[in-house]
Image 1 (cartoon, rainbow, N blue to C red):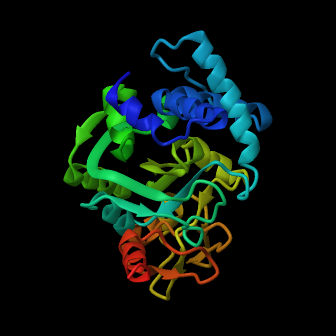
Image 2: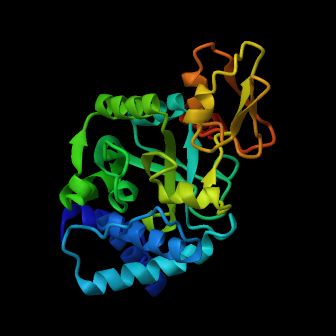
Amino acid sequence: MLKSSKEFSKLFGRNKEALGKALEGYIYARWPTLNIYHMRKLANNLVPDPNLILRYPTDPIPPEIDEMAEMITQRVSLSLLSMETSTFHAKVLRLEEAKAILSIDQDISLTNLEKVVPYKIARDIILKNPDNIAVFECPCRLSKENPCEPLDVCLAIGDPFAQFALEHKVNKARKISQDEATAIIKAADDRGHVHNAWFRDALGDRFYCICNCCKCCCAPMKAHSNHVPMIAPSGYVADINEECNGCSACVSYCQFEAISIVDDHALVNLEKCMGCGVCESKCANEAITLKRDPNRCEPLDIRIIMEHFKSSNG
């Protein structure tokens, strides 16, 4: 057994339920594209997309692994319909918040983050060796024809996840520095893509990676657009002032289709806005700012959260 697999197994207990969860997590972490393929296939059976052409993973996969991945996907899909039961979900990050996570220089253990990650299950941030980062090809992009590029936009952060991806060569994983990871998310931001911090119960009930997502390729973002509560907002909403000239650049870039032009002025649909900040960075007139929405969950600003934990613990 590889060292990273041994470390991965330590995330779980020794009873039958824990071992089952460890197996589920191993299959997901080892063959993420297979899992996303089955998720897309199941979703497409329920809500057909005539433009979607699925791609099965090109790596050889044992038939028994394929069968288990399909069974796991069916089980997980039922949990996704409620934030109370969801076992696989994301939190939207603004660019600066994503950068802050990638610059952590110490092990951290932050728990009971329900005000930040508003799901009952899988909401901890526990990082060991956070400077160990692996970038790998996006399973969502690999699972469909003609995906957005580049493909290597997913970042496994800290151990055992980064080392697991590297040792198992998951989706062409390669080790990168914190500066290189920051450059990847900045380039994704320039393209107008959304930074999401992902959490999963089968990966230790915790945060494990940052993905840079687009509405055309990301399977969970597709699910979100179909009212499946897989993605939590950043805690901010876009606010548009009188400097707006109705150029519609924000409309083209918004991954959540939350902005429209009415009478030569951009209007934000607050129900759809997830506070990602893409529109703010793309507005040439600087007419858009993000403002804190007190009615939404708190931002995942690791700097503020760590300070809060320090002060709470003396």
